[in-house]
Length: 143
Ligand SMILES: CC(C)(COP(=O)(O)OP(=O)(O)OC[C@H]1O[C@@H](n2cnc3c(N)ncnc32)[C@H](O)[C@@H]1OP(=O)(O)O)[C@@H](O)C(=O)NCCC(=O)NCCS
Image 1 (spheres, rainbow, N blue to C red):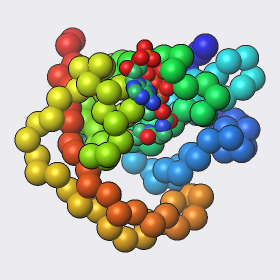
Image 2: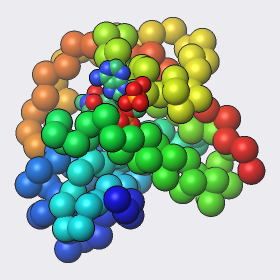
Image 3: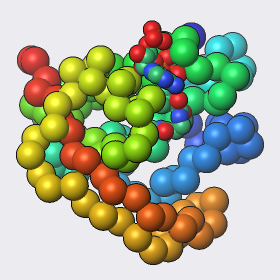
Image 4: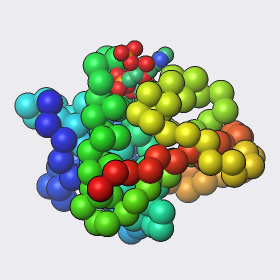
């Protein structure tokens, strides 16, 4: 498995099997996990301050192989390379698999009150109805 930033000429191939829902937001970039010519999963890294890991998604048939863990580690390395000392993410209160994943990667709740998000957000893939409560977690990155 290999992880690399999404290249322009791979957008079609990746977009056919994964959401790429934050593509075109202009605030960061996607990391994509590949096996040969097959995209397995992706994660969006928003280069805000602090940076935020978003849209971590692994194709169902490739889950529980450590791909999301590897994508998270790759995003952390991208942050370190840019001099950031922490990486933030938001996770749904009911998304147990993601919570177990991120806890295992060393992310902790930083005490920001849970955020209730409700409404329609416009994504590349079309409008998405959301009604969720999000927790904000962070990891301190060692130099
Ligand atoms: C959550 C998600 C990204 C995990 O991807 P993944 O590649 O399967 O994760 P990993 O293989 O790196 O899992 C690492 C650890 O996380 C935990 N974990 C992952 N999926 C889990 C599940 N369904 N149930 C319980 N624990 C889980 C386990 O501890 C796992 O280690 P193990 O397999 O050795 O037990 C994937 O299930 C997914 O794409 N879900 C839908 C999108 C989503 O919810 N994204 C998160 C947005 S915040």
